[in-house]
Image (tube, rainbow, N blue to C red; front, side, top):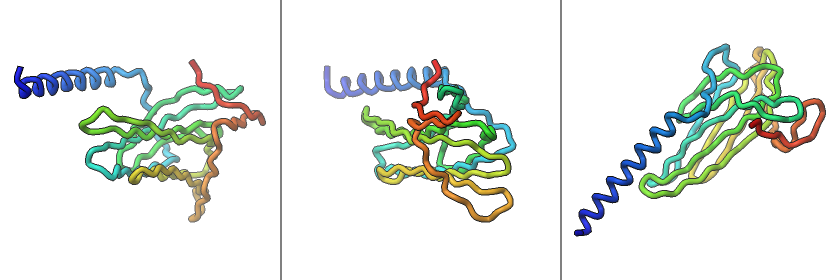
Length: 176
C-alpha cells in the first residue's frame, strides 16, 4: 500500500475516533451548573497557551460541602475567554474546583491541572474570580466586596484538605 494511502487511512481513523469522542462527551453525565440569577460571582477567564500547537480550556466545578465534609456536585460551567456571571448559594460552604485542560491540536498530548478552594459566599457581597493560564502559568484569584463598598479583599485560598464545617479539619470526600 503506498504511503499516501496509509496516511489517508490513518487520517480517516483519527477523524472517526474524534467524532465518537465528541458524541460521548455530548452524552456526558456531568451536570451543567444553572445559569439563573441573582448573580454574585463574576468569573473573568484569560487563556494563552503560548503555542499554536496547544489548546487550553477551563471549567469550574461547584460542590456543596455537606456535614462531615462530603461533597455534593452542583454542576460544571465551561469558561471561555469571556466574563461569566454565576449565582453561588449564600451561607453554604462550597468547594470550587477550577480545571485547566491543556491539549495538543495535532498530537495526542493532554494534561489537567486543578486549582481548588473552599468558600462560603456571604449575603450582600459580590465575588470576582480572575482565572488565567498564560504560557504555562496558572492563576486563580478570588476577590470579595461588600455591595456598598468600592474596595475588595482577596479571599484567602483554603486548601480542600482543611474542611472547616462544624469546626472540623477533615479532607473533603467526593460523594459517590
